[in-house]
Image 1: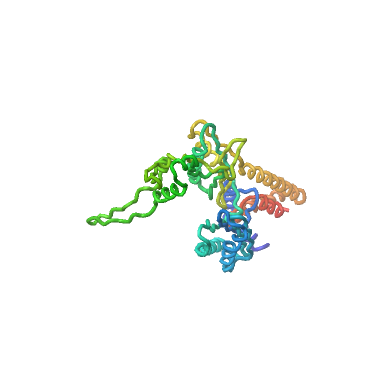
Image 2 (image 1 turned 120 degrees about the vertical axis):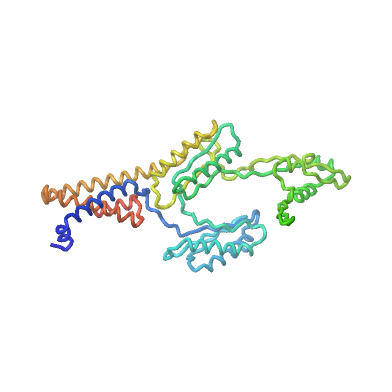
Length: 397
């Protein structure tokens, strides 16, 4: 008789308590176990982008891409660098060695390196920016569209909804797709310019002189610090239209609205627009943290979306464009069903060869072992997905 068997028979009460604890803890952990469709994969790559509108690819390569590559090569954990220089944009893919486990430290070092190299790049370069969420996938995407509302109003509602979604426990990020940038367009008529005898540069200089956003300093008035904030910065389209300028030929004063039409609208043509069921829309892509039960999170997300839609004015519509928790639940349910079938087959085989009584005693160890495996898997942060369930099925064999 083995030592473990002797100990279990000698201390029967300890054995019974241990068995009950494993059974109860295993069932409780299984009910709230993090579920995914497939195991998470660590992406050892980040993308660095820098932009300079209109710059030729050869100059982008010489002035932007190469300095960034030299800075990246100084990071010892970097294994591979692939770059792509296009008109107005530089894209660098940075790969990390397989033996590196602390990727966050590498991405911090990469960001620090990009902050240092930014001073060496030509004036006017936008970036460089580091994106280390290359492999991040959305657990759900929510389409927001409206009938009878402007795209600007749609943007404001999307931002508010994004802030509400961040209050859900387990949310990692909420990205917006389809949001268009707004611009102030000043359309000048050649006929009006000729009538007033001014050039477009006069109006541009007047606007540039007026729109000042600089600190005014602090005045110490008898021990009281008074912050001085200079006025003149534009807060509305009307402020731009009311800017006064001097006509060089006559010395008279005129407004910008006398010569130009000032309006605020979106970039035309739109950049990467999004349509849902043929309607212009904004899509909110929700990603969750590792270890979060996506099925349970999907239920909470659905309730949050229903509450948000009921609070919106009539005309706004929120619909799920994609909803992964349903796929996860179906995939895990199918794998668990296979696991139950395998368990039943094992029990039948054991009872056939050992007899009903002995088979039931020996077969009872199988579900108990599975519950103990679930407890150990949870301690090791192994999620319940098709691969881990398949491993349990193989172990049963």
